Length: 306
Image 1 (spheres, rainbow, N blue to C red):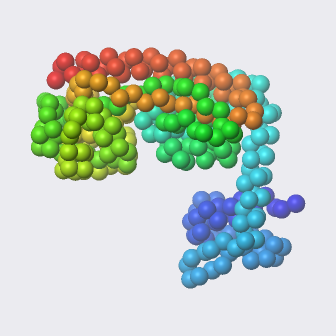
Image 2: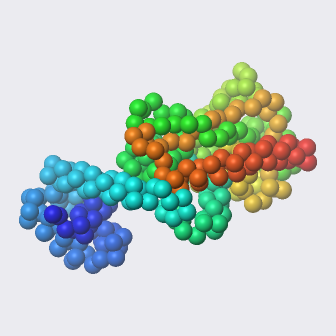
């Protein structure tokens, strides 16, 4: 049997491709990392090809990495089976996109306070990473902005999320010229979201690419900072706007028509959810539905007040 500590060291080294960073993550010395690798290479042959500071994994290394992933998945399945009937103890593992994550993470923490035997593991990630993490059993639950076409995945409707046009408080964006004058605060999904919303709000427009970009931020939790400071407008999901602390410094523009995304809860189809995950999902559905209604109401009030 392969020494599990050596295998863990190898897996992290394969991910980071850097001895010092691997040692830092694992709390080891660099000499210990090298020693673990030497033990494994003594048994399996060369696992990496060293080109200066660059590490390229060999076919033998890839085979060992696949084995390590299989062992991790087996351990996760064992842990799940041993605790799946206990609703109040064990780990809740969920991975989500940013906006819905900003909404549900505080809810999960409140749930954990109510059930101290639970441990919450949440990760923010784009759709592709969410799907990959659930497929590879790194997370039991995931939320996607699309319904995956994969027989290994069970997907059920989880929540709705409205796109919003958000401007600095005191600004009115009634025409395309208003958008051009104020400028756009972009983000990784910004142009796609703006295109979808503006195709309905401003039909026949010149396209979001024609609007001056006044800034860019890839952290959804910070995206409204430049908007609140008067530097531009943005388009983002309502839950991200709702999580912003300084609501008085921003205004949600009335776009006349709604662009609503369906969010999907996913998990592996081969086995049922653990009892604790099932109970937690029921709790989240109730809380998110209330938050959505509050979000819509707050948007209406925001528009009237500004």
